[in-house]
Structure formats: structure tokens, C-alpha cells
Image (cartoon, rainbow, N blue to C red; front, side, top):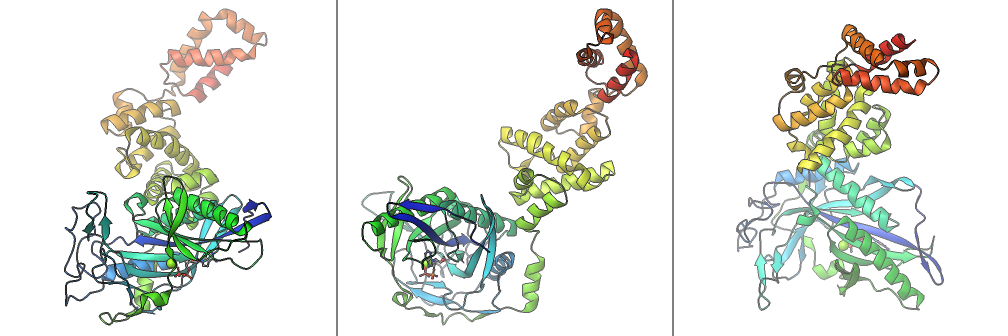
Length: 496
Ligand code: ADP
Ligand code: MG
């Protein structure tokens, strides 16, 4: 797809274009590790989730966790990517205290997932970012340096956890596009259920590759900033690194291909080590593991297990349900919210005997206003909403058939949140049913008009603005429970 962005860095000697490719490490949602049965819960006591395999005891053999394979394949399918029916694990050899094996099991030569793409939202519209590949690999343990300045500790709980490394093509052209890409990828992974996307727990982190070039020129030399762990930091790392490279190039220097570190405190990057090449790691096929062969059936079963994906859902909300871009975006941002909303719409459609498209906007406005407001006030996620979508549908159906007015519905909803009672139970117990009985309304109108003879005369002499006054007085006399449409109709008749 055409490059829609025109973001440039203005240098002293002209404009520079930014080129970015992201390598996102996403921890696979699975109860056990990639090659062992140890648990993967976040926040456990150090070294309590470590099997003999994860600690690399001599003679221990890895056994591939099928669930991690399934999640990688589902993720690949969600990215429209080619699934490699044959893949293999390689050893990436290096020494570090938190890597007891002395190598990481990864997939260099034959990754499980090949090329695909991801649609992102930019100010200039939608843009497709290419996906190069996804491979499965083990995470390392964690070195802890800040408990005691004289010692370093190693926590192996994370050692051996499954990661998907999702590698983008160098198609990203601005800090905002980098942020949009990570946001869209996180949303997709959460929809698929293959990664929880908790960036502050380290479930998702990105290596940010940045280079600059004159618009249209060949790609420049890139640097890679490691392990950046929030959307905002990723955008900052891109911006800082691009500006730094432009300054170096404009002062006659050259960019060296190197690995850099991001400092969240200052939003800047600094050198960590010169970039290593694949041969530095002495990659070779892991002799302890068989190649992974996937049957067509397995891949198809994975495909059928996918939910409706974000891009399709957003499109459907706008095209079929008639929601605005904004409301569609808000309601589909999280799958749990979308599921709640869709149950509400389906249930309300049944209760009112109307088409979903005819009640979806009402439901969307109510959910994004009343419901989200209440959940925010209560500090609750949608999954913990005290009111179920079915109960909410009952409430909105009472408004739809004029049993209660929209303003009474707000009171009823508050009571539902407090008591857990159903909408109709509250309406009955508190006598909130809207009065549509024309006799009672006519009596109230007659009293109001008799008590305000002067205003009636003024109205009849042409002061039509007084109509609202009569409506208000009648509603007040009816205790706020009269059907406003009927008040309007009967008042017009009485005044004419
Ligand atoms: P490595 O495995 O050594 O990190 P890859 O070729 O797999 O190298 O690329 C890693 C990432 O770097 C990819 O996301 C890719 O899009 C990105 N990339 C490659 N070339 C450039 C470049 N010139 N500028 C910015 N990013 C780049
Ligand atoms: Mg890399």
C-alpha cells in the first residue's frame, strides 16, 4: 500500500525520512513454559516456577508445549500470514548469568510463521505494515541488581517462558506510526488470546530499529534500541534516535550499526554494544528437538478458533450497525467490551422486536455514556460490571416501549448498580412507570391552565415560548412520570 505518511525530521541541510522496523517480543499465554511444565504466573516468589529443564540441569531434555505452537499459529493466521507447515528450532549460543543453558532455543532459519501484515490507523487513514515473520523462542531469566549494591541475583521464573518474536518489515515511517503499530498489534494479540499484552509486566516489549534517509533514497544504516516496554516509550525512542542520527549525519559523521538502550527517565537512547551478527551466535539446529510438522487439519482448526478480528469488527460496527467511527472504536477497543455490547444489542433487538441496526446506536450511546461512566466511577472492568448486558437490555427496552423516560432510566440504572435488582422490579417497587393515561394527564393540564390564566392568555396572544413552561408544570404535577409525548399532544389540544 502507498506510504500515506509525510512525517520528516527537518535538518539544517533539508528533510530526512524516518524508517522503522519493530521486533515485538510477546509472551505466549500458556499455563506452562515452551519446553517444560513449570508454571508461568506473573509475580510469583523468585525461583519458585523453575523446572530442572529451565535450570538446565545436565541430561534434562526439552519437550515442546503444543499450546504455544497453537497460539503462534493462531497469531500468524490473525495477521494473514503464511503458516510454515515445517519449522525447526535452533540454538543461539551466548553466555549470561540468567541463561543457564548457555544458549537460547529460538528459530532463525525456519520460523513457524512467515509473511503477513497488520492494518494500522494513522492520521492520514489506514496503512498496512508488513510482517516479516514470527518465531517461537524461550525467554531468559531475570538478573536483579537493585536489592543489594554488592550483589547480583538471578530469578529463573521467566527462564523458558514462551515468546513469539513478531518482526515487522521496515514499513513504519514516524513515531506516531510506531505507536499505532504496537497499539494495533497489542489489540490483535488480546483478541486472539495469544498474549495478555500487559506491557508493564513485561508481557510485550519491543526492539526498535531506526534509520534515516533522504526522502526516496536507499535505506540508511540502522540502530536497534532494545527492550522498550511502553507505547509512549517506543514513540519517544524512535523520535530521539532519528533526531540523533540526523545530527550525526549532518555534522559529517556516519551511523554505526549498534545496539542501544532506552532511558525512560530522559526519553533518550545510549549505546550498549556494537551490533552482533548471526554468526557471532554460532546458530545450529537444536539436536534435542524434532522439527515441527503441522497438518493442514491442525492449521484449519486454529483458523476456525479465531474470533472476529478487530479490523473486521470495527468495519461491521460502522457499516452494518451504523455507529460513528468514534463509537465503533471505543466499543471494539477491547474484546470483552465488544462482547458485552454485542450481547446487549442482540438481547435488546429481541425484546423490542427491532433490527439490530435500529437499536445499536441507542445501545452504543448508553454503553459509552452511562455504563462506562459508572464502571469508571466504581473502578471496575467490564467483566466485573454489576449489571449484565441482559439486565441492561431489559432497562433499555423499558425506555423503548415508553414504560419509563430516558431520565427515569438513569435513576433506575443507579438503583440497579446499587441493589442488583432488575430494571422492571425497581420500576414497579418505586412506582416509576410512566403515565400514558390521557385522563390523568388531562386532569393535570386542566389544573395548570386554570392556575395560570394570565400565561394562557399570553400564549394564545402569540407568546409561544410559554409552551415549555406548561410542559414543565404538567410534568411536575405528574411527579415526573408522565409520557412527554402525550403531554405535548394533550397540551397542544388544550391550548388551541
Ligand atoms: P536482526 O535479526 O539482525 O535484528 P533483521 O534483518 O531481522 O535483523 O531485521 C530486524 C528488524 O530491523 C526488522 O524489524 C526490520 O524491519 C528492521 N530493519 C531492517 N533494516 C532496517 C533499516 N534500514 N532501518 C530501520 N529498520 C530496519
Ligand atoms: Mg534483532
